[in-house]
Image (cartoon, rainbow, N blue to C red; front, side):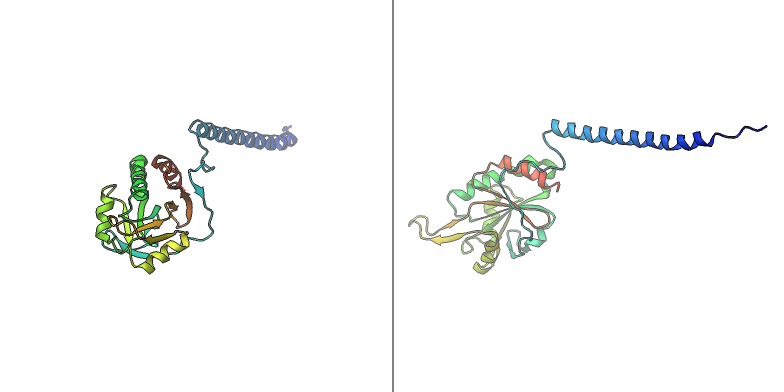
Length: 221
């Protein structure tokens, strides 16, 4: 007489096998997450958490309004033309006796510190002294720091349209007989992300090494 299969045992063994599979998959996932966490802690960061940035973090819901100015390259350049790169924007002028060369000297440290990621970051200096700062003057001035730096200038109205939405202040006043007029201005550096959102504001004399450390995170976003 033929032996009947034990259907009860077969029915109970299938769920048991599935449970064991789910258990092993779950354990593998936990080990993977744990390994990533340990690696991240050893390297001083978690991939899903932003680092402690070195400036004032801005969470604007709107992109920076577009503007178009004359570039040191001889072209008309819009802010939107630079989309896809992280921008470090500084409003200054070439005749500035102190804050501007100090800031440019710090920003000069950023590209070498980024290595292969340097092409993903663009330093932009927008002149608040369009009477003296032609595209040619800006190109010569910025070349002393880094030839990749981009200078922008334009009419008084164009520069005001670029500066005002970003909260940039500037005011020309008489200087000495030797210096001629000078321009008081905001000395912050503004970090704008690849999508055109203002992300970080750096105060005057923030070290270039600290800015570069933040850029390594921003270029990965």
